[in-house]
Image (cartoon, rainbow, N blue to C red; front, side, top):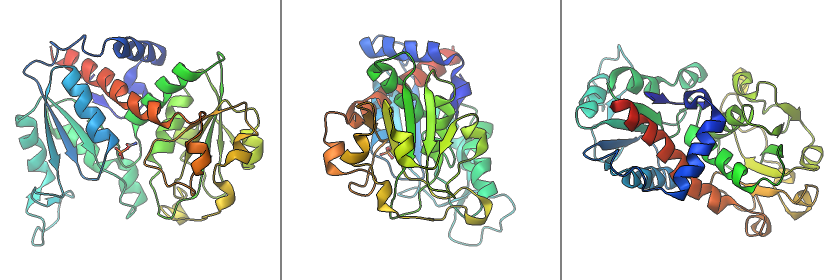
Length: 318
Ligand code: CP
């Protein structure tokens, strides 16, 4: 595996999930694979789970790890070609990327949407430059438009907790005080559309996601109807995708907050969220603290999803 940015990069998804479940039983089983290999994690944005779980996955595989927080202690990087660099940016990404590639064997990159220009965000400018110029396998630790390590962990978690062959999985928009990217819901839809689930997306009108990720998913604008009979509720906020409102908050309607009354409409659904989560905006204290909440095992599976990706990348180095 030379790059990981979306579900297709995993090949057969059933095989990938089985590989994850096997690795979870023996997470140090491939420790020799990463001997004398180095993972560089490059962060343009903050992280708790991705930072720790990726590092842990690399340690499981016997790798060394290095972390670069681009905005803390590195030169400020210019990312666009053609810019006269007479401002506060001292180095161009086009030199920085191959230099980073000199010091490591695999690179993970986190670079969120900037919301300045929709086309630029959806081109994944920074991530694609790493893929093109690093000379190393590169994986997304959340890009501008996708978060595949999260969605893979979500699918592993659903596989572990499902009580029927084809569960009903509902992705529900929920309110948030800040404009958030579409990366998590995009990747969740990307993965759910390839999994054996009955997938429904519910959100207020105006929050339609990119059709390339929504594909054949059912859209239900009535959240209560969507929740009926659901086996998994995956709550997440996202900002508007449509050109005229790209990156904007169109609603902070707290009637969309996931509470016990809404969860009572479901088939005793498990509650999921990628975290970090704003309590009593996205979900009430009662729901996230309830036995139905699986947000912690979901986060724990980030180690496993990453270990599969790193293992496959290490195997491709041979
Ligand atoms: N879910 C997730 O990616 O968490 P972090 O932003 O803390 O890494």
